[in-house]
Length: 232
Image (tube, rainbow, N blue to C red; front, top):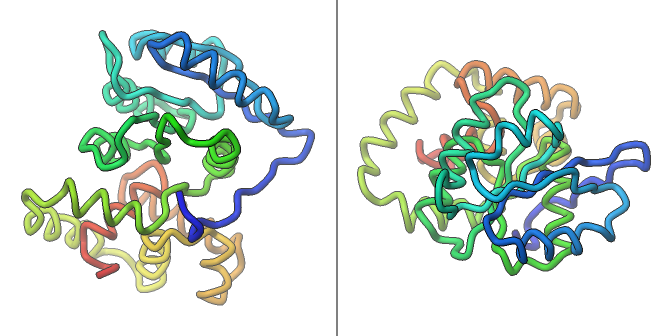
């Protein structure tokens, strides 16, 4: 995340964001729990040590957000994210990683993760990211998205661009404008201001984009718009 990211919404006192932590390192889980304990609107409701434990843990704890380690011994975070995001009413997923230009990160985002965090991210930024994705916003800055795609997505770029453009072809002009704004990392409020519409209308456009494109979050819309070259 960077200075170009939108400010994270702060939920009111009546809203507590429920978080499930998935990491095979007990020390990492303990450290994250300590970090999040200071946020009055965030509560760690459960833990899992492997991706294989995620379905049962989600059923038991009903989290709003899952912090998902990528590398785990039995079922890794990529497979766990893909399976989880295929479920109805799936929680948002933020993947945890050591390297920010990693092919696994891009695969997780394409599978439906709402963003990623480096494991050495400061506590305040972790809380900010959790609040963002719980509110339905993206947490990837445009610079991070471009770097991921340029560093990792070079192979088959032409084919990927053509496929992305074909998927976006049926969009109305206004929907395409919203998709480009999402790819540029804009929040709903920023899109509403720039495109002269209400925030409620922006949300309606995003919902229609998800249905039309058969995607499950705004990060996937942003990646598709980047793949199509709409932000070049």
